[in-house]
Image 1: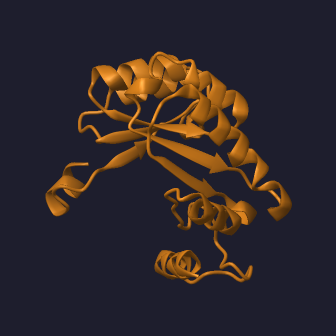
Image 2: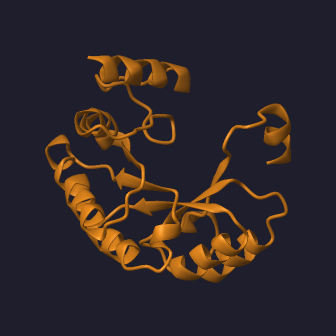
Length: 177
């Protein structure tokens, strides 16, 4: 974080708190409690164990929260959380699904968000097969999106991409079309 802040002053820096990074919710919280250089924002997946305690800890340390919502159950949990209003952004994440199932998942999550009364920026993105349909859906709905090698290794036509830069350029083309 220190190196990025030196090289990129003024840029918002984020970090993951994904449960996949460590072994269990207790270990994750212990690791995050040990952070010396804090990010501006941390993604918190609301379907993972220990989310409420993690969100409380991040708030205590003035680290902004990006609520990762992968399912309707996670969205409902977030909507009823005492930490929902403290979040800076919602990240609606569409798992790797066939093209014909990509729309229903985020639309159901977005309905829960709308009903919650919380007015936060929303970023919609997908993984693997869902990546490009999610980009198109985000454009249609007027939501932010993202693309990168974390999300997909392929172009919209299914062939392998050469780089993150190529994915971003292709996303821009899809967005403009």
